[in-house]
Image (cartoon, rainbow, N blue to C red; front, side, top):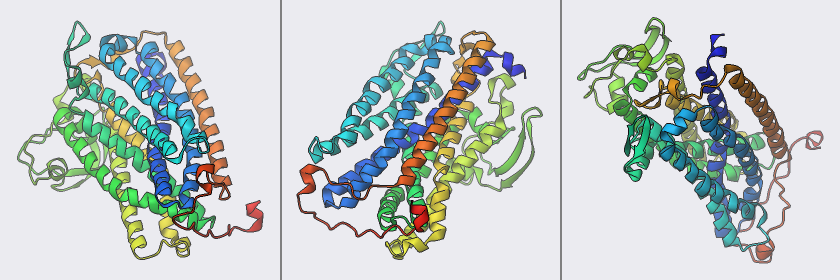
Length: 480
């Protein structure tokens, strides 16, 4: 229990808690906003009432996530001033301005148009409402851009130099366009979108399995599947590019990701560690299962390495990541989930092409539907694991190779940090329970299929006749 008297450890635990909890909510809101743009656009194009009803129903879950994301995100940023004041003083001229851009540009844009998206259906023309939805989605994903820009700069600092322990910016655009920025943003963009798609698909599968409006939710599952056909493979490709960058820019992190203790020379065809039991104290793996000759293909798509893969023993213990097992398995869980989601997408697409996703046949696709239901939380797990690899693997540096985490914490008394840590844990637990309660209420109640169209279009003829929904086929007692 020595960590209870260590301010740095407690401050890191508090930031980890707030970051892991906060990440649950914008992951869904940023991706679901794009889905809302798609279904509302389909409604405007086809005048099919189903798409309008989908936009209204899924917007309820969006706003629930948005609210909790705001409540959990602000305290996380405040910690840069409370628990990490030396860090803020050292890099605030750049890092602080980037976080300011996120609040002033992205969050305000999203929040400013959110009211129109939620309450403007009968107050603004349909195209203006769609524009508001687009602005909400753009603001949400612009927030992702600025957050990933700031974090990427911590991974590969650029655009200036440290003078007297303080970062002096010489080229602002070079700092923004640091080597990690583009792939990091794309990887997170596709992660949020893919997570949202499989959450929407999983909830749709739950309704279909329970024979609640299978035709209606079969339509949402098809929209999700059409977008996932593009997103799931792209996410795997961009993930590979991100791993390549770690190979070139952060060799100590790569060594931890692969639990590689000894250096592998260039020109070799090393095996890839599938599973292992890393031992930090003895600086070796207790046991491991390897795939011969695979590592060079994963890193360079070639049979032999053109560059060496440095092992953890190349660095002194104080200069390399610890908790190797956590980094090693977080990376594999993230990668495995990405492959599983792509496989589920491929299987579902095959069933669609076989004509098995019609309103009448989809209820019989139980294996596929259970796959989507089980996949619903997997995107969250993959995102959290990815951030663990990204941030824990960066240690012992706050700014990679420049500022040590141990030197960047505010020298607060440990009991004060422990009190705030426990306070955050209690508050976030209440928020989590509240989110599950209200989210489950929205889902149990289901969509209002009798909701009238906006007055501006309710008298216009429909370009496509609305689908005749099958009645709710649950037993009478479960409908009440």
